[in-house]
Amino acid sequence: MKQKNIVVIGAGVAGLTTAFLLSKRSGYKIVVAAKHMPGDYDIEYASPWAGANYMPVGVRGTQAAEWEKATWGPLENLAKNNPDAARPADGETEDCEIRSRSKDLGSATADWFSELLSPNPWFKDVVPNVKFRVIPSDQLAPGIDSATSFTSVCINTAIYLPWLVSQCLKNGVIFKRKVFKHILDTTKPDVHPSGQTDLVINCTGLMASQLGGVEDKSVFPARGQIVIVRNETGGKMLDVSGTDDADDEACYIMTRAAGGGTILGGSYQKGNCESQFDPNLANRIMRRAIDMCPELTRGRKGIEQLDIVRHAVGLRPVREGGTRVERERLENIWVVHNYGHGGAGYQSSYGCAETAIDLVEEAFQKLAHL
Ligand code: FAD
Image (cartoon, rainbow, N blue to C red; front, side, top):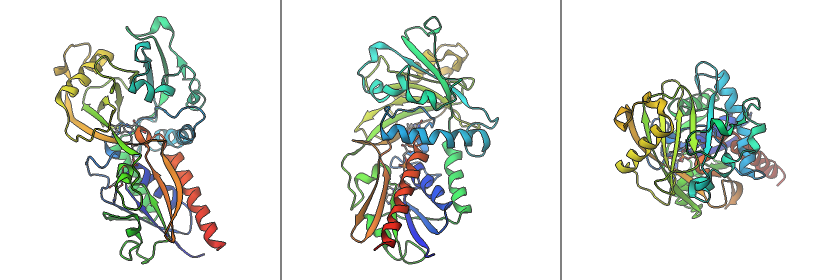
């Protein structure tokens, strides 16, 4: 069988997961070519900044929900059986509590979380169902109108992204630093070692809005600012439907595996590309986190009780109309797109990559019939 030469643009969670799953199949010689690689921290590179946990936001009945559904199994398996990849080293998963306040209805954060906040979300049948529960009203925290709790996982991106690279390398994938102005620059002879590219997989995230030949203007950033602290919650993840400070600010806490620290979030600022952290927002994030989870500072008041590792900002690559996993013929080459995952790039990564791979295989079947 003739070798199929693939170039994946992008080494974020989308590009790496797609390359990893494709590299398990025979007949493909894959190059991952990207401007940024695991280990880099850059405002154009979303993946290192993510929490990253599994808190589904895809609305029931949508393709987004299907991708998240398909991703739970692989992530749970990693968390339980691959402590070198995902949370946690002791093989357990984390409890996640989602709190809802009626007054947040209609806010940007509550809209984004609409499925997550539901007392009857589709994923209650996906995550271990013995664990999903609606919290009784007499057990709700002050100011909270309803809440649910379920088992989830939290990925330490500093471990997980290099783990994906290592799995790809074991399967013969080649990694290269490249910056492409146009998507068809991937077909130049110096990109793939065979000198020929048969198919391109576009996993450029936010930069799909600028890459020549794609220039998808429906892709835009939703700025997320976080604080990483050494304080711990006892393994609990918490999220609330909104804040009293601003419509596009959020309040969530998650503990990364293997000493990755505790993430305090956050914000969901559409169209904002500012790469530097805003100290006032950082103070609000820390104050809200302590109010929501006094265990963080063992009941002591004041943000100075938090032991800060660093402040950080990342841009979620949101796409109007949802993530694009599609095939397209550009000039005489097939391109498979997998970008625009917004705030769900990890929790939909396996589902999206599997769909992208189906499109790759179909493209070669079509070529075989030409
Ligand atoms: P990226 O990680 O941005 O990677 C894009 C890649 O393409 C990079 O390698 C880049 O260098 C390359 N590239 C782009 N253009 C070019 C070019 N022209 N030439 C060469 N290379 C190019 N998701 C979750 O599922 N759970 C969470 O808890 C979560 N929390 C988040 C918290 C924050 C604060 C943020 C910012 C995001 C969060 N996300 C979360 C979302 C998640 O991080 C993104 O959806 C995901 O990282 C997108 O991955 P990607 O591979 O598509 O893009």
